[in-house]
Length: 410
Image 1: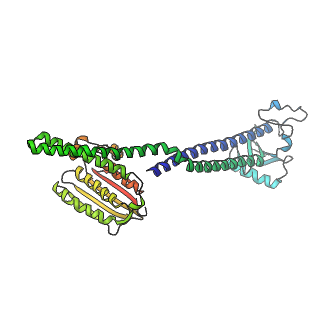
Image 2 (image 1 turned 180 degrees about the vertical axis):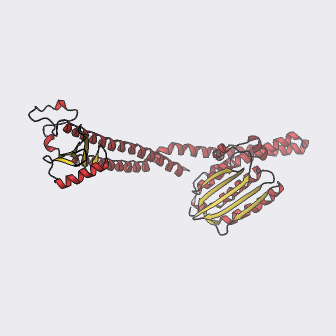
Image 3 (image 1 turned 90 degrees about the horizontal axis):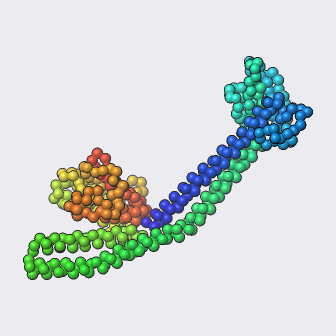
């Protein structure tokens, strides 16, 4: 349980970190791309507004006139070309005096691709273009080389991604070392709780034994009456509850090496099926078993006797009258699948997830009549979790099924 809690703590922390970092990195990348594209679009618009230059010839350069950052060197470091088209989309003129990387043939090919897109603005490789229609039906296309800007944006994205991976790795390593300390208070409380249950059970056994002996003496002296019978029944009930609590506390502990052994799950399942066969028939119910042979497991053998006993006892108690209880033990891949199903009308599917909670009883009056305390399924879950498995329940068509999946190599 402690290992599972630690893994969940690390998993939740890593998911939170990765989610936050993904949002942050995406915001940086998208924001940087949008800023770069917006600045290029404003430069293209300015070129169109000034007839192909950043400021009219002969005018005094004034950076305050522009709505984006521009310097006296901007006209010389910006590479672009301008093409005018006729209303029939034919090239009327080409201005290549501000770019040296393209010849007229390359420009014509680029313009043809731009015209085919039908877009007013966009990217063509690392070139950003803007199409401006004129009053004569033709259009002017201004294409600006954005290689440096896009390269800078890509470099920023790569650096951000590298920082993201480094941060995730650092936090993961820190969590591996610090998670034990983070969950230590919970572990200490859990150990104190287990110790309290064990100590309290031992302390309660003595007065219960004395009370039981006193009841026997009173019965021998005064004879049997309903009050003595009721007191004896409550003593037995309390003794059983204490044993169940101690068993639950022990099954939640980690498996000790000296308690581990190889055993046959098939034989244990068959022995429990035979034991509960008569009990089911006496209650007017039918128990069928489908148990594959040769299923072995390394674990705590007594735990699996208890697991099958809990699941079958629960099925017999709460099965509908004249219903059929089905036990199945099969191998699927490297996992052992144990399922117990029985008809049980009137269940609330919304409460299924709570069936494994301690002391939870869906129907308290029915549970009391059958001697239930709401601990059995909690113990079953602890046993399965102790062997690195998982247990679940499912309710459909009036039939409830409890399924445990346990890795054979645990």
